[in-house]
Image (tube, rainbow, N blue to C red; front, side, top):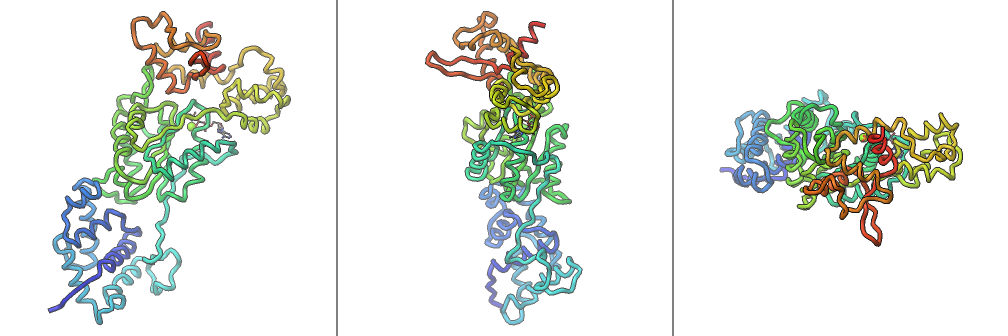
Length: 462
Ligand SMILES: Nc1ncnc2c1ncn2[C@@H]1O[C@H](COP(=O)(O)OP(=O)(O)OP(=O)(O)O)[C@@H](O)[C@H]1O
Ligand SMILES: [Mg+2]
C-alpha cells in the first residue's frame, strides 16, 4: 500500500504549466481557487459563495479545467476524483520520490515541447517560453479606437485626482463629464498613457461604434477571452479575473434627448443593469465613462458610495494661452480675455483662433473690440447640446440669457409658477454643465457662460 502525501503547491505548479502549454495563458484566480478548494473537498456552492460567483460560473470554469486535466492524464477527471487521480498519477510516474525529477514533472516538458514544436530544453528557450517561476502575463491593450496622443497642456490636478481614484482607491466606475470640446477624450488618452502598466487588459471603445449593448458585450468578451470565449461568464466575472481598464467614450449617445438629464434611450436601458453590476461586484478593474451628461444611476451609486466618482471637467484656464502659441495670434496680452470669453474650452478656442487668424489677421485686440462673443463655427456644436434639452430647461436657459448678473433661484420666472419643474430644470442643467453657480455674500445666482448666453439670445431674437 502506498502512503501518498502530495504537496498541493506542486499540483498547482503543474496545472499552471499545463494551462500555459495548452492554452498559452495562466490560471486565473477562480481556476486556482477551484483546484485548491476541490483538492480540500469543498463544494462548488462554497467556492461560489466565497468568491462571489454564481454556482453556474464555477461549474463552467471547473468543467473546462477537468477537461484539460483529463486529456493530459488520459483518464476522466472530475471534482470527485481529482485528488485521487492526481495522487495516482504521481505514484505511477514518480521514481524516487523526488517530485521534480519524476515523470509527473517531465510531463510538463513534453507538453511544452508539443506546443513549441521544439526539442530545446526549457532552460535554453526564449524569454517568452513559459517558466512557472517568473512568468509575467502578457498584457492586452487595445487602443485602436483611442485618439493619438497630442500636445497636451496642464490638467495636472485632474490627472492626479483620476490616478488617486483609479489606482489608489480602486474605484470601479469613474465618469468624466463636460461639454463637447472641453477635453475629456484628450485628458483620458493622457491618463491611459500614464497608468497603462497597472492593467492587464485595456480596451478603449467609443459608443458610436455599437448599436446595442449586446454588440458591446460580445466585443468585450471576445477581447477578454481569446477564442473560444468561455460560456456563461459575465463582464463582472472577467473584471475579477484580470485587472482591466475599459474606456467607453461618447456615452451620451445612450441617453435620451428632450427630457431631464440622465435617462437612457429605451434600447439602451439595460446599460443601467450592467453599470450597477460593475459598481456593486468586488474587483480591481475600472470602467471609465466619458460623457456630456451623467447617467442617473451613476449619480445614485455615488450617493450610495459604491466605488464611483465623477469628474466634471472645466475649461483649461490660463494654461489655454499655450494653445494660442501654435496659432498666428498677435496681442498675446489679450489672450486671457479671449480664454475667459470662450470659457477655456480648447475646442472653442482653437476654432475661434482660426477665425481670428482668417478675419482679423491674427489680432486678438481687434476681434475683442466686437461687443458680443462671435459664434461662427461654434453654432452647430452649441446646437447639439441645446437640442438635447427638455422644454422646461430651454425656458430656464432663456430666462438666464436675459439676466444681467444671473438668476436667483428664489425668484422663479412666472412661466413656472404652480409646478416644480423649475428646480428640476436647474438641477438638470447643472448636471449638463450648461449653467454655473456664482456664490456671493447675497447668496447664490446661476448664470450662463458668455458663449452659451449669446447662443440662447440668438435662438430667440432671430
Ligand atoms: N489639455 C489639452 N491640451 C491641449 N489641447 C487640448 C487639451 N484638451 C483638449 N484639447 C484639444 O481640444 C479639442 C477637443 O478635445 P477633446 O476631443 O478631448 O474634447 P471632448 O471633451 O472629448 O469632446 P467631445 O465630447 O465632443 O468628444 C481637441 O482638438 C484637443 O486636441
Ligand atoms: Mg471626446
